[in-house]
Length: 72
Image 1: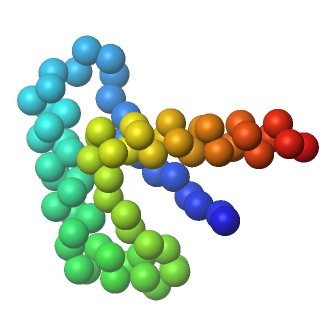
Image 2: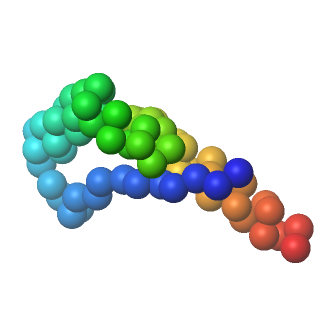
């Protein structure tokens, strides 16, 4: 499986209100049909994850990669 992971990062200590605002804006953009249509043109799926879900995803992904590397 080949995936492209794209996330938005902010400096440690960024106020939660700012992070929440950025996350809400990105969620809105990702839900926009015109935005999704542009990615459809390059056969790329847009899959928004909020910060909690993305962190969990990255932790699970890291474990998968480490397990796979250990078997080489």
